[in-house]
Length: 57
Picture 1 (cartoon, rainbow, N blue to C red):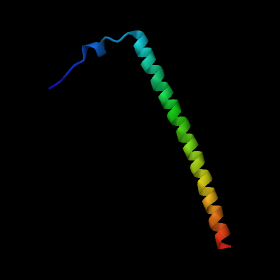
Picture 2 (picture 1 turned 180 degrees about the vertical axis):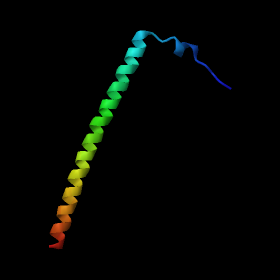
Picture 3 (picture 1 turned 90 degrees about the vertical axis):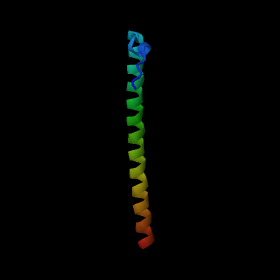
């Protein structure tokens, strides 16, 4: 069984533009949070390594 939403097919140019802008914002925010996460993980890893070095020696 296939359902088709006729209203979705008749979207205006403004609605398409809004959807595109929201998608772009979503992509950039995901990249920003991903880079923050990567930077924080590197910091935690270096601190963990330094703590292990101090504990050993």
